[in-house]
Picture 1 (cartoon, rainbow, N blue to C red):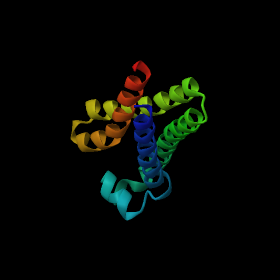
Picture 2: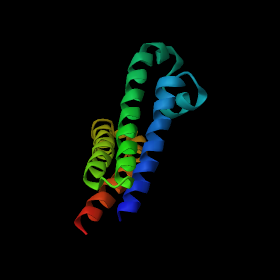
Picture 3: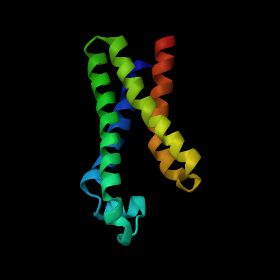
Length: 128
């Protein structure tokens, strides 16, 4: 089950790196415009917020990736702690989005589904 947890964590990290790219590096690009739906008239006003939010997503992905590396190197306790920190924070952020912005339900589910699977698989793996 730990292998499944690491795979889900890696997929969640890749997704959050992609979100980082859209928010921090490609805010004016067509994919970010389509994904986030921010009107052109508000893009400049939201740029700094999006830039910061993108790095938040990147740092969560980095925590999960380091956790995967540390776990596969044999330091299971420390590695899985980092995996749970990264993916648990991703999941918590998705829940906040879901609860505070019901109109963004699809984004919250997209953002939180892989982290949820990673958290569940990690916990089951630790209990078995």
